[in-house]
Length: 89
Image (cartoon, rainbow, N blue to C red):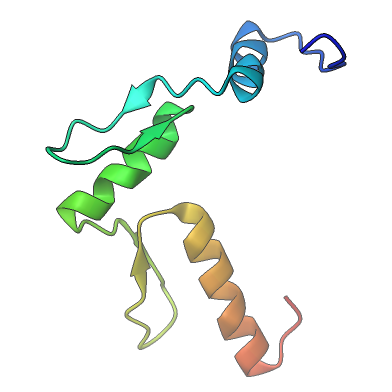
């Protein structure tokens, strides 16, 4: 965008940022009937777990069986254990 002041010394970061302006989403899901596409390969990888049912990120708290598709979701979940036990998150 002409008035965007974003700067980066990493070519990949600039390329990804430009997609934000163009709406480009070059990483498309190849699952039949799925129209999901992403601007980052990692987002597509996480999305594919929704089709397989694979939840590779597991909570390590005692007696907790929580599993999820993304590391970010697991981090948010782990904070619930801190809140419930009275620790500061």
